[in-house]
Every structure is written in structure tokens, then in C-alpha cells.
Image (cartoon, rainbow, N blue to C red):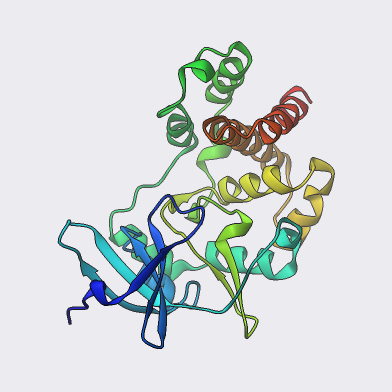
Length: 259
């Protein structure tokens, strides 16, 4: 069925680089996204994202998806340690049917080396030439061993920030914006979240709540993925000219790397 998007009043949503909109037509309101992950239909069927209403290709060649608009609120930074957030992430990581669906769609599994290569992709020259960051990244490459290869990979969202968690009016927690989905070590997801929101002294609460088996191998991987998370956050904050957050993350990186 063809839907005429000209009938919709489109309002760009903050933080989505011109790809996400609120659409209003008569008494109906929907969430529009351009070129979102084709995985979105399966996520919607599982109740992880709002229900998918329709998808169509536009004249420009973009794929436009329309999802139910859910009244509610985005989580705050302070909400990111809540039981609801932890359990939603764990349920996604443990979802074998979605994982198998991604694998059948030939989704790539990202090893530590491949994730490190993503850091180098489009890295600004000044960060490429930064002696300390280069030394840290090189050390990451050198310390990948068999402990990283025997891990069960899961579906990773790839951008667990508070703006991607929506609590609906009926208290259903959704996780949206799946454009960076990957199959990888669950610590790729978790360490990004922890480095962004919590000091290392509070990480043990998350590990216990998630029910990780905490071994020497586990903590080796925690250190590795948290260093990678810091490097990726520094890259992001540098590109966004967010100097305060950048400096805070540099201090966190030094704390993790040097201890």
C-alpha cells in the first residue's frame, strides 16, 4: 500500500542528523525514520521498539519507515542505572531468535580487531597524530588474545545512550535507533554505557545486576572494551566540539589504561 508522505506535517527530531521526524496527519501522529536498519521489523515484533506501521521507498531512493508514536519521555542520565535499563539490555543480548535472524541476513560479526578498525575509520588527523591516543590504540591491538575469541557474541545495539531509551505512558521501556547494530561481545555495549555514565567504582553494581560471571578473563575484556569505548567517545566529542566531555573522557581513559 502506498502512503503519500506529502500529507504529513514533518517535524525534525533533535539529535538524529536529519533522519528522524515526527509526522502528523489529521488526528494521527507517527515516528518517521529514513534509512533505518531493516532489522527494525523484527525488533518491533518483539516489543523492543514501537510497532511498525509501514515501510516504503521514496522517490529519492530513501527507505522511509513509520512507527507508532509513543507518548512518554526519554530517559535521563540518572536513569541509566535503573533495573529496567539493565534488564532490557540483558534480554536483548539473550535473544537468540533475533540473533539468528541477523545471522541469516548475513550480518557481520565484529571481533575486537574489527571494532578497533572502526575507531580508525574517519578518525580526524589531529587524533591520528596524538601520541598518547595512538599508543593506547596500538596497545589494544597487541593485547587481543584467546580470551577474546572464546566469547559468545550477541546482538549489540551499538549506541546505548539515554536519548535512545523511551519510557511510554504505560511504563513500557523501548530502545530505539538501531542504525549501529552489531554482533559482538556484550561488553562492547556495556562498557560504552559505563564509560559514558558511571565512574569505575560503580561498575560492579552493573556487573552484578547483569549477572556477569566475573573472572580474570572477564575483567581483562572489561578493561579492553572500556578503553575502546573511551577512544570512541573522545572521537565523537572531538567531532562535536564538546570539550568538557572530551576532557573528562581523557581523564577516564588515563585512569583505566594506567591502572
